[in-house]
Length: 211
Image (cartoon, rainbow, N blue to C red; front, side, top):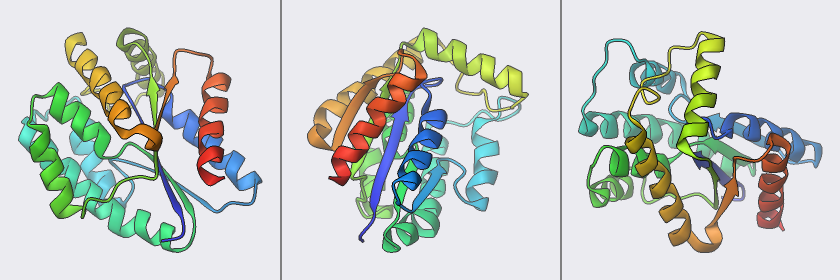
């Protein structure tokens, strides 16, 4: 595959969506073909799963069920969107990937991370990004941002925002731990900064990857 696979990870309200839009525009302006996508929801099937997973009305999934549903979305996403775009030589930028499953269903929900990694190895053939950007923000700040956005837009995707602060602190620590283990394949960006500073840092990291 001649393209590059870049993932943005982070807690609720860390600014991933806006940063991805900025990166896609900046890279296209430099002549790159870019596919911007997300998990869950990067395919029609994934969009249906997204509604089931993120709605805060009527769905009380167990941790194991969340893992399986997130993985089903990911398998479809990688095979139908990510790999074909990479084969065309495009830069793929995804809002979340398996790092979020490790953080949310692993550290947050308490599932064995070895189980998550085994499922990823078997069903995703151990397919990992070229670069993961971890947008780091204090959960208190991120949750306030995210709840305000959901309320303002009238979007029913607040199931995880409704979980307690300790859950989100475990998620944040997991992301930081993952970044530490990933070494040169990861960057941590302070998402408590102004949006333009976050976006500039993300673009610098991506341009460094592209050489």
